[in-house]
Image (cartoon, rainbow, N blue to C red; front, top):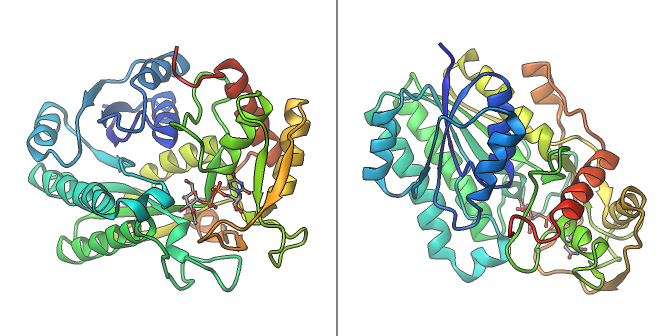
Length: 340
Ligand code: UD1
């Protein structure tokens, strides 16, 4: 019997790629998504890309315990991957209650429904933003946590809730994955990142400049203590993030309790290096202008990716050129994202 994985937020950027990866490995996949920041069209494309349909998809808010309970009653769920959350840092400062309600409240609702239905296996979507303004890179899972905004605090709170739940329900198996900067797209060009409005993040912004939707990139500061003065991040291909989740599901039974892993490559890239790599991959000019630093930004965030490598014998496989090439292919084939 293939395992059934329930994916909350399965129509989103990372969720949709993870669904394809799970389908490609024979899992039955049930999606729960309320589409506040995702397109239902991504669901059609998941099936097309994977060559297999989802088992089911529900237009459901994870905070709606009644609706969630119906989903668990309809499917024998073996494991849950919980992506559904708000994720924009600036927005979280403007709307903190919504962030706590959806991210923390949604996780609690999910945990109680999982408990009622005896589902004990969970992979949780966490974030490197829990480390805050890191003093020492690369960051290990033991580096101090000091989130600097409500979004990051919701992720850390969820981790703490999960740790407490695991201490109480000793047969629970939880893996929290702290992603660094997921970028790129599925190489077939059907699935990618489709932010609503002006992109907050650098990669989708650069892609929209390359395709002519935006005039130029604003580079937020070139006076950081980094080799070229621009911010350094650990960009990780979304296909590697997706694969990491599938491998995590395979390793849920390694142990009971709560375990935390970084999901990054261990390689830092500056904004200017990213711009150069994208120009090379797309053959387009990427005009940019250096402006002031963005409030809340930090100089450098790079993962120590060795824990996951040791625990699962797994590492990321795709480099910056592949991230840019695939992000560009999606942008070129879908200049307006999932909008028809
Ligand atoms: C942000 C969030 C992080 C979240 C991630 C993905 C913060 C502090 N962190 O990461 O929690 O997981 O998004 O959603 O916001 N940059 C420019 N011009 C732009 C946009 C960005 O120069 O128009 C620079 C930034 O200054 C930074 C780098 O590009 O140095 C990456 O920025 P971004 O893509 O927004 O990601 P983070 O801020 O690292």
